[in-house]
Image (cartoon, rainbow, N blue to C red; front, side, top):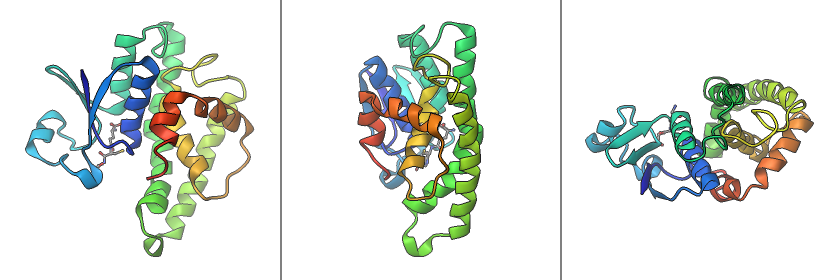
Length: 207
Ligand SMILES: N[C@@H](CCC(=O)N[C@@H](CS)C(=O)NCC(=O)O)C(=O)O
């Protein structure tokens, strides 16, 4: 069975778990990282020299980088579905996956670390506000796209919705002021109705 190494409240582990649940791929997940530790030990570093989660194992095959894992599993188990076979649809999905890793994630992560992983007395209000403003600016870009497209890659749910879907869950769960982004909210409501999202993202909550 496919092994997933990583704690279930990591956004990057959630990408893999959500994708597997969408495709009904059975998974054996082991808690690694955060309070569970294990990710700096030699045995883990031999699999993933970054010391980060997630890592997957399929027999002798080991893979890290969450979006690469989602692409690999999608191509293997749901070609033409979660992993589009149409090249333009696939490139659109890839684009939003890359944008989450390079653009949206780095602006939202400081706010997450402050509001969720830092005790109230140690928080830095300026870091939260900077992160809130930059994230809102980025989400305006996604909102404008979703005003013209039902999903990240166009007309249907694909792997392109997964990384941005998890970031958007966090954005709506934070106790902060948010600009009205109606297309983002309508898309998010469609995503949030999916049982696999409820099991692996919203059901886990902000922890
Ligand atoms: N680009 C990597 C980033 C992985 C990453 O930063 N993972 C975080 C959790 S979301 C991590 O391993 N943090 C250390 C820990 O959990 O102990 C990916 O997408 O897989």
